[in-house]
Amino acid sequence: MKSIGIDIVKTSRIANLFDKWGDRFLEKIGIGAEHIKSKRYTYEHLAGIFAAKEATFKALSAVGIKTSLKDIKVVKENGKPMVKLPFRIKNKLSVIGANRVHISISHEREFAVAVAIIS
Image (cartoon, rainbow, N blue to C red; front, side, top):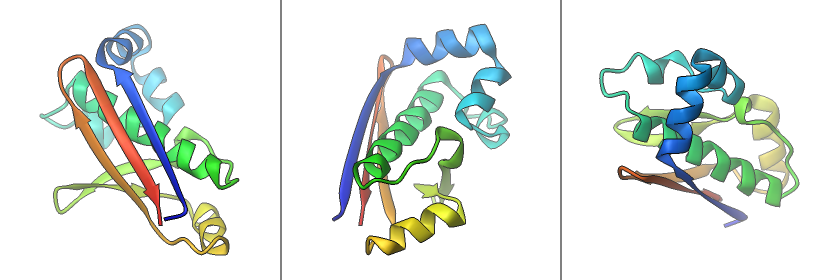
């Protein structure tokens, strides 16, 4: 393990930001249409994605890799949340001997939490 990041976010905070700014909020933090077009879309879902992006951002920052929330994509593969990073960030990870970001997301009505581990 090279680094770890964790984030917790109040679901109502994300709901308020989305209700106020709509698509502009999603664009600013880099949450794509695949998350908002889903029939399963909820504020809890968005809060979980936001927490995963923040946790990944913190883990990357801890090893000296600067990026933005827009660069961090959270997707599902085989039902599991995964982080997709641009090639330039992947290269920086390989320099420190890391090749993967593992994430775990959990949410309930009031809060969403996520952990990111760089290995």
